[in-house]
Length: 348
Image (cartoon, helix red, strand yellow):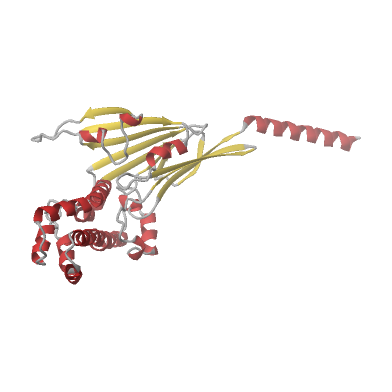
């Protein structure tokens, strides 16, 4: 049984060049804390209008604009630009839709904070993309160190040049993500499912021992990836090689059931990995501080590489302020009156 789930591992080497799933996000931040959100799939299948990695659709109140893109020459494939829009009363309300507990969706957490400081009022807004890692049997802390995290944090925006030294480190990091972390994550999920199939069919401990003694063979099956990005992991072939007697149809059905959740998680990781991201904030007032890649007036832009949120949170934030006119006028009047009184007192 060939399982098309090697996509995450086989393609992540080309992570810097990914542009199959270009996405853009826009948030207009209002003074009262309300938010106007737009999420756009710049190029993709028409099914994204009803089934996508954010779990949004017209059914849950998003307005939809769907435009077919010009077809490529000699291609019958139809692709669309799909834009969703929705207004929210608060960041918490938006989090209830975009930061839900699902292993097959993006998790984007937003915060809005407004502070009053007499002369000035401040607004700080942030959005954090949670890690897209969905492997459950492996920990990133066992594969990535502080140097890796620091390197990822200083990576520039998509399309910006990096030094030769950083380029070399990036190649090594991609290899670590691919050949070690992702491959081991898939292997552990498949191996666990195979053990469960053996247990479910009451074959006895001897066959569990056979699996344990042949972990290398199973691992090698996971690492076999074709040029089309599909996995060559063949469950039935492994059973034959290990001479484990199981009814093929039942075993295949059990294995498919046990790996259904994992395949869903892996499909999400594959989609996210292929993303090319652009995020925009439109802030009220004057922007005074942010970690944006570029700023144009009160509009801020980020173009993060997917490395930024493979296994770490990636926060984008901006802070703006306005002068409180009445407080300033009152302060000036008080200072003027104080100066006047002091002057009169000194003269008398």
